[in-house]
Length: 511
Image (cartoon, rainbow, N blue to C red; front, side):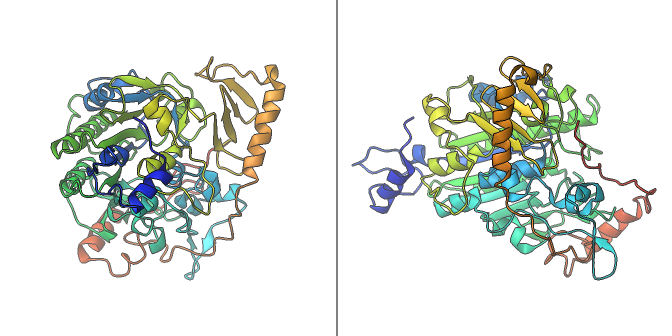
């Protein structure tokens, strides 16, 4: 496929030479607009390890649908994210590394003393004299890929996990470019009760399940419900307008308790992965059923490494680290006629690159106030051009995790240097063999870190400190069914914790 420059595409559209209508074409151009402005469906799993899908060496019984998608499309062997879910999601949405938006710090971190300590902060005190959370989220002034695609005439939908702000209205998805929303706002929901297990610093449940930013009462397993919502939404689409549907599952993130099927044969974790794979199969089938197969760029990837090194094999490290096991994730792409079935894309790509790639394919504008780290990868992915991505900045000084940069074949992680091309499992620190390269990469990290904006004093607080449901407006007068369900769930939780103990993990320490 030859990609038309977005500026030229925009001029052609403005001049009336081509139509923005999906699938339309004009005789005097010979251009298939459907090829230039694809529908985009981005499926994102949560905490799935690199080695868990069958196509990466995992148990093929658990992932037949993803394995089939791998055969139908392209497998990216060096696709990278940040090492935790919220930073990755913010980078995906903005095309900017997480440190630039302070999204390397998650919203819930501002209710956890061990995280606040790293910032020189303490828990805030609310109007009632009790400790509460400082409000932190992806700032509404950031331009998201949903906003950019909406400007370009796309229908935009998020179906699943947001994790870029859960309280103030301006921080919710429909204020950030999404025309339709379904799912949950915060970090990790119970798959069956739709509750977040705690509202740090308060260790009790909060309800978190919404459609178009209103709490909804449903029964079912979130993995299945997300797939059902996708089927409903795509059935409403037509060829008159392209669409961007972002489907960030909570699967296979914890807590995993009751999985509705497959536990007679597999562990709960494996059963949850198989349920997720079935949902992927339903999404792919719905795309094909409604006639969008040829006109849709479909991506299936993950937000960060898995919780164990075994799940990330052959790589070292886990989620919350910048070893390969924490940041190199499975990624598949399918776009018939543009990506060769069963092929591999072996160059580096980072999750920030979705922004520029999508917007350019859509004929949208990349002109904006805030600088992008995103690189348009369309020529490399679809035309066989050399990849423009030679550097990735994972974290800088002031992040929760160790400052880490990839430059070419090498990765500097703190003071350790690894040759990823020769030693992808990061067994050998070669810093003493390349002192000049260490200095160069460290200087680049310092340069980037100096571009981080000030955090500010975070004066806004979550009040009440323990809402019934996330979303400040949604919590003002919660329905009786919601209050009853949350009260019943809280009554079954531990009512107190030993000094220093919490229901959430403590901040990672450098290691």
